[in-house]
Image 1: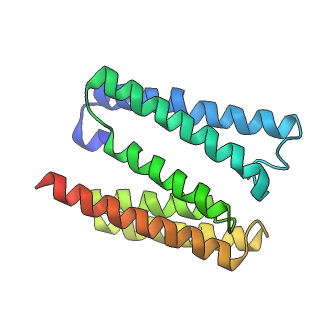
Image 2 (image 1 turned 180 degrees about the vertical axis):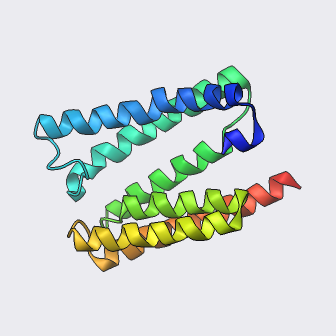
Image 3 (image 1 turned 60 degrees about the horizontal axis):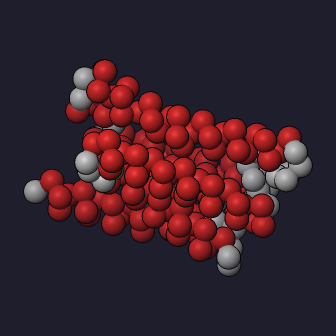
Length: 168
């Protein structure tokens, strides 16, 4: 998203902290937990095992938000909504194992809608396919995929609404 608004250098300086503070640590966390037997698989399909994953992701995103605020003196609105999505998924995990894969892909579709509605529709199709594959692979039931999708639609709607309000 940043490459559309900023120079390549500025885009890299925006993405690098996200890569180093969120993406890489989460991948290492999951890999380490699978290798040590704490997680059954890289999908973290077990509802009980997901509890620690959600907490770790939230800590990483929160650390990034604090870092970004201190360094750049503004709240990264997008990452704030990702944190909200993670919190809502964590709460839903107490009741049903909502599909995190489906939820994140629907949220990404919302991000593409901001840039180009056609890309948003395409990514929504990808999110639909991701949801179907979660069922086919027996990682989730249809109810769990629908719950992940519903949560993501709600958070995405609020994100898009707020994004439109703050731009005007």
